Length: 400
Image 1 (spheres, one colour):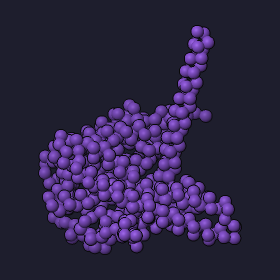
Image 2 (image 1 turned 90 degrees about the vertical axis):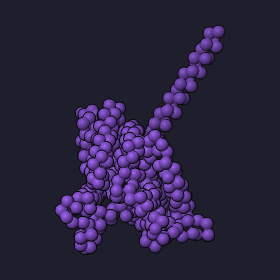
Image 3 (image 1 turned 60 degrees about the horizontal axis):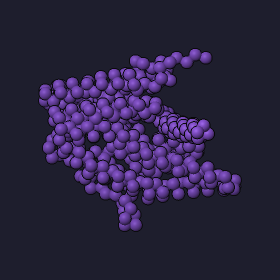
């Protein structure tokens, strides 16, 4: 009996040790992934945040609801001013895959210049623009390779850019191990760019395109669900689409709704996550004692106030143990469910955050309800993130 008892106890200890080891390895894997994502996106946050401020100013000034107070409209703004402003507001996001690919390529250990060229290939003007393909009124369609594979640009696709950098950098490092030095300077970049581009544009790219088309069908179905269920699901999942770079799939639906009804309820649903993000930033500012984290939270919040969420998503949510992300997704879903129940919808297409309020001035009830639910989303996300989401390692002052 003693031997069996000892054996049983030993087996339990061994199983427990194995379980702890597996859990520890899993945790290391998650933390390692978070570190990689942080290393990729933190260096590009400043330009995204600055672009967010440009977009915010444009959204506030170039808004017919605001300009009407002064007896003018956007149609009266000179074309050259619009052109110059668009350069400031659109360049970063137009070339975002190239910027991400450059940063990721460095993280994965490749030659950065190859990374940025690969990124530029993803958004080459020679390829059909992804946003135009998503717009049924543009008349632009994907090019069909071999009669079956849709070829389209990767505008706004974050995951595709990261995959491109990963494949390219890994292939480059393998090639350099056996490539003769006399050929390395030319043949390694040649092989890397050729193979990586073909794999992405004929493999991963078309898959992402099909995923985007299916997402449109799902979104249309969700909008019609009653009792705020569809609103909750859209609000809770939209931030994940932003992370993946698939959020431009909403463009087709929004343009169609505005053209046919004059209103856009979809932007109201996913706008709630921007207010939840503001709550996240406030919680980090209130509780964090880490100066770097506070600086990131400050810059991210300024950007989010004017409708650009990437600094919050990549600088805070994906960088710190995912708890803030889960809280934000739940809050975003709750806020979206409420605006769905009250049937709140904008009369134009624009940014979330502060500029979004101007899209509801056409009706006093719509504006008051939108304002109340947005503030509610900020408060809820702040409270829960402050209590449960801010990681312990940045709430303590480290003394050496």
